[in-house]
Length: 215
Image (cartoon, rainbow, N blue to C red; front, side):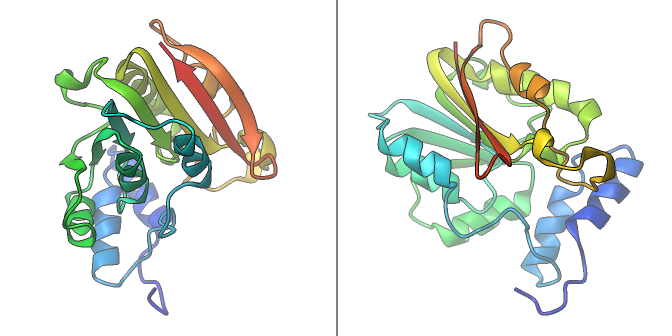
């Protein structure tokens, strides 16, 4: 981690949003981090704790999985290690290159793709879909499109896992994002077009939603 951060995610995010490109800040952030001028705030060097617990009881057995926002690969590698034929994507080409260097023998199919305009072939194609703290980095006016894409990935009988910061645990009026926490209504809105909510709970001292859906 650089001793003095020159670029921040919030500075880049606010500039991109002001320019009408709400997801245009991810690639500059990863590029700055690659040069040692920034840190990626959501990269922890290990997979999400709730996802670790979930996959321990749900082996993949070759079923298809999609991980939204691959970042530096911790969650996709966990899912693949549990036996899923895993695809993972990120909007940042720099992030995808970094994953390839970090996991050169990975079985994950890493791709550059945009959640707001995903490949048509992914429609209802995955038995497991994992979305962890990605959509919360988008402003609320573009979230409906992201949520629609997310629900569309899920195959009949599949499982969709979603984790986002919970709005009810924050001082929403004075909050400065990104991220911009999710409301309960936004989480529940993922249940559409045949997708239904199975469970929704607050975890991590009530600061994070953990939701499970199926089709």
